[in-house]
Image 1: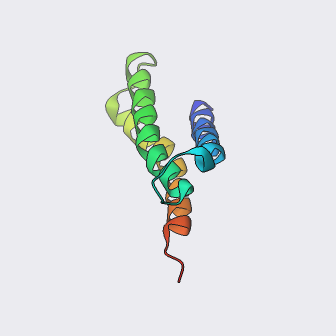
Image 2: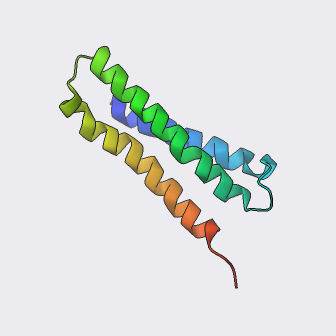
Length: 92
């Protein structure tokens, strides 16, 4: 259940960045692309913190937590990558 909550938090962060994307100064680039470039490293840092908490507080080993890290980071990052791909393409 904790994994689902953390993934939901990732989607919430993604949503917040998409909401504030038009206000972000991007120097001429599409603001959604800038928001996705900001989201992916930020979400990776949060995912690694979740891994560290799982190891130090919950008592799991690194080998037990590593697949969870892939899922927790991967699902929201995949959606962000698809959004980036969709809005990052040049329009002819």
